[in-house]
Image 1 (cartoon, rainbow, N blue to C red):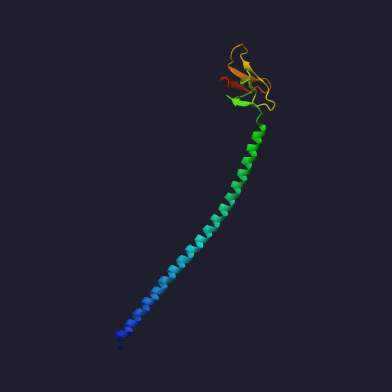
Image 2: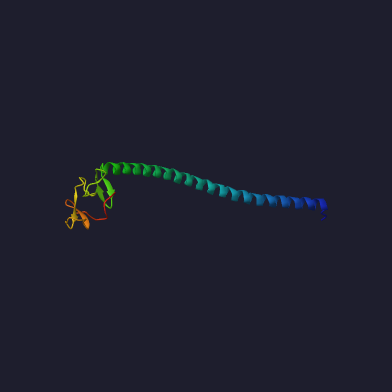
Length: 137
């Protein structure tokens, strides 16, 4: 059997090319798998982003509605200070505060009931108390 150098070179070239093609096919298959995984991940992320945007929109709407309700519940003309509500009067504020807990905001009375400043304010309707921390200025 006589094999010449040209035939040996052709055989070597065929083996290299065939081997390279096999290696290339492995790489292509790997890249296809990676692309499929990335496509799936991108789809999941798009779905998550869509859901998060919808949730954010709903929460923003709920916040706006809650803030509107709070503004409606705040008594007009009464100012919060030291845990109670004070009504402006003649450049200052009335001597006794109003209850922040009751819807009708009744006038609170001081405890102990003496001529000076009380130690705390108490609502005669709901019993809510607040420490006397001074009056607003």
